[in-house]
Image (tube, rainbow, N blue to C red; front, side):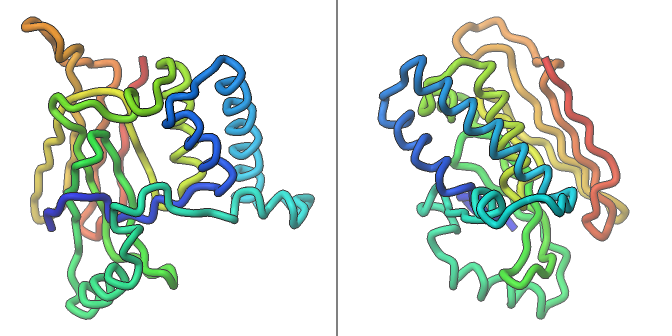
Amino acid sequence: MGQQVLMAKMLIPAELLLSLAAITSGNVTPETLVKMNQQITELVTLKLRLKAGDPSLTATEKAHVTTVAPYNLDAWDGYYAEREILYGTLKSLNKKVVVLAGDTHNAWSADLHTQTGDFVGVELATSSVSSPGMEKYLSIPLAQLQQFEMAFTTLIDELNYTNLNQRGYLKVSFTAQQVQADWIFVSTIKENAYTVDATRGHQVVLNNNLIDVKSIQKSA
């Protein structure tokens, strides 16, 4: 299924939304970045403890990572009822669904579930070829962006992968046995001479039940 905006539930801790709002408004200061880095570290630590079933987590600590909200209501997160209707239709047809998306200008991969937790399919989203993405709107250094990537995939339950700062494209191959997705990024869009950035490519291979059987993520 091809469509424009992200379909996955991109729900992040509500308290982190406030920090993101301060940054996207253009009020980026060294103090703001230090505070956000500390906040991300604390939230990721709590989420990892929650996933591990840590019995020492308090109700307040759990609330920090389970009180979530969508960060972009222009995507399918702003159309909750319609998305559930679509998911119900797809499940009734017993289809194995691969959703292809874009528009955010960043690369994403996510699993799709109904509100009751039933698996619907997967979403593969391409980065833009030239339009800016999070690296412009967040206006923070590369090191912090890569920290954001790690935090997003930890804190957002459906999200498996993201690249928040590079331009490129997505190549998807289908056979009867598997789906292979390759995110390919270029070194620059500002010069005529460019190369494929081999340090940040990503590949996902799904079997015919859309189960991830191989993920290869390179890092700089």
